[in-house]
Image 1 (cartoon, rainbow, N blue to C red):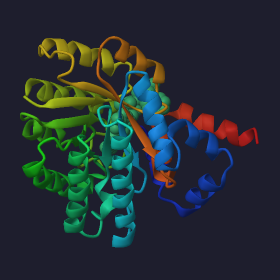
Image 2 (cartoon, rainbow, N blue to C red):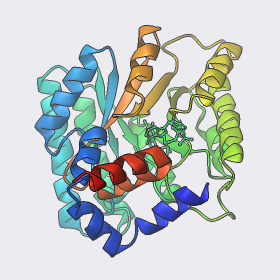
Image 3 (cartoon, rainbow, N blue to C red):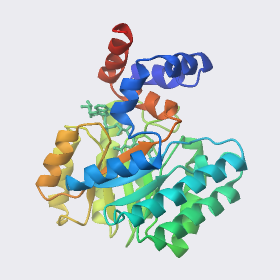
Length: 307
Ligand code: FDA
């Protein structure tokens, strides 16, 4: 991970930085670019627009790291309301949901997180759609995979996420590359120490390609989450090498990031899913996007200066 990214991710934990960023008027512009809005209605409107462009969607309610059962329940209720609304509007053929287990209690009660995720999965099944469990900090990976395994006994379609910056990921990919298994592969958006994570960007990329090969060679459904203009052609070549037909894998990108590329790939017949975050608690998500790309931080600072 480059020093710039590490610095921003470290600053993201500071209360002072939190206060400055959330109070800055410039934050609005950055929020609008990367986040669909605050309400379920905003999320549904963004989904409708993306679906009209031939894109698929996964919706994330921003509420990670909830501290108590009451907050976790509010997150669950929002997901249940969202699924109901998507179903009512005929959007579940195009849209699923992404769930962070820390938003439903993982940090303080794994059993509660499992029960809450269970309720979201049951509702998703009723609405004929799916759920993907986002992957968070490295110290939650084992617990997330345990919850995933429990959920998959009942719903094999529950999606997992693997992060190529972690040294364990190739082995995790091998364990998850089974029939029906939906696995999103990303680079990883959190800070982690060198004993568990690759530190050089090049090593993260190599690990991504190794894990992609494992997933493509298996019987599951790989979901390649990246905007990287160097990785994307490589993935296309790997897809061909493994004889994968369109529709047996997909590409995923974040809302507001490389939208032209999203539409270009979809026009080529690829399945492209856009990760659409919504909700009031945008700070942590926003800081990860700023850390990913100096240009995003420059955009934020420029808007700050122009006020
Ligand atoms: P990288 O960051 O190396 O960027 C390569 C290039 O892509 C940049 O040079 C730029 O051109 C473009 N780009 C990348 N990010 C950009 C941005 N924010 N704004 C503008 N341009 C940008 N992480 C995680 O830890 N757990 C998870 O569950 C998920 N889930 C997830 C879902 C989906 C659909 C996506 C696309 C990503 C995630 N991530 C994630 C985030 C992921 O780990 C990673 O941090 C980002 O995707 C950025 O990595 P890239 O692969 O795009 O490459």
